[in-house]
Structure formats: C-alpha cells, structure tokens
Image (cartoon, rainbow, N blue to C red):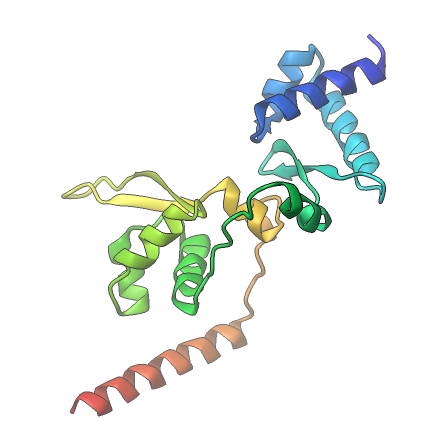
Amino acid sequence: MEIKEIEAQIEAILFAMGEAVELERLAAAVGHDKETVRKLICNMMDHYEEADRGIRIVELSGSYQMCTKEEMYDTLVRIAHVPKKHVLTDVLLETLSIIAYKQPITKIEIEAIRGVKTDHAVNKLVEYELVEEVGRLDAPGRPILFGTSEQFLRSFGIGSLDELPILSQDALENFKQEAEEEVQLRLDLTT
C-alpha cells in the first residue's frame, strides 16, 4: 500500500471520528505498526501546519485528533452560530489548577486545599468539559475522583499532562506564604 493511501485512510478516520483516536486503534485500522503510523501522522501534522491549511492534527496523550486551526475562528463565526465561550474566573482557574496537578482528586481534597466549598467550581468545570469523573475512591461513601479531560488538553494547547509547567520550590513557598497571609486576614476580619 502506498504512503499517500495510508495517510488518506488515517485522515478519513480522524475526520470521521471527530474525537481523539488512540495510536493503537489507528495502526490496527490501517494494518501497520504503531511506529510507522506515528511517523506518517507526524508528517501529516507538519503538512497541515502550513499556512495554507485550515485544519491540523493534534496529539493528546498518545491519541490524535483532527481540528480546526485557531486562526480560522473568525471565518467560522461568520457561517456558524457563535460558539459559547466559557469564562474561567479566578476561582475556576484555581480549582482547575488543583485538579490538573493533584489528579485524581476528590472534592473534599480540593476543598481542603482551597479552604472553601468547591461544588459550584467543579460542576462548572465538568459542564465546560475541562474536568471529568475518572473513578471513585475506595473509601467510605466512595467519593468521586476528578481529573482533567481531553478537552482540557485541547483548550490549553498541550499534548499531555507532562507538559504542565513545573513550579519551582521558591514559587511554591511564595504561594504558601500568600495563602497563609490570606487565611490570617480572613481570621482577623471575622474576630
């Protein structure tokens, strides 16, 4: 089978599926080994990144998805209904950060870190499809465990959680000090 024919099969699968497809499934579908398919997809990704293309292929934790380039948003808006843009408030971003770095995590663990109830924030993040249920903790009540979703990876333009920024020890100490000062300020205001 010719390379162009295999690439056409991969392209058809990614287009038709409309969601991320694991490398193993793609390799099985086109009848080639994973490394060959990975190389073909990388070549396709380079080709799609050229300026005259409106689509691209992104890698999401070992899976691949075809999507529209961000630069095409204004053009798409002219033909489609304006997609709903989700506003991530400071509370949502803080909660999302905790989930991203500590996952899998329960609401109670998030609340212990934030010091306030998180029902609304977690529910909004689930609604925005940035966070999803990833299982249940083997503990009394079997609380739900939350983790980030593929939509989180797409929204923040990262291929895997390994690409999340690593905070330096100094930054962590500064955050800890700021949190302690905020807690003290709240205590002072209530007394």
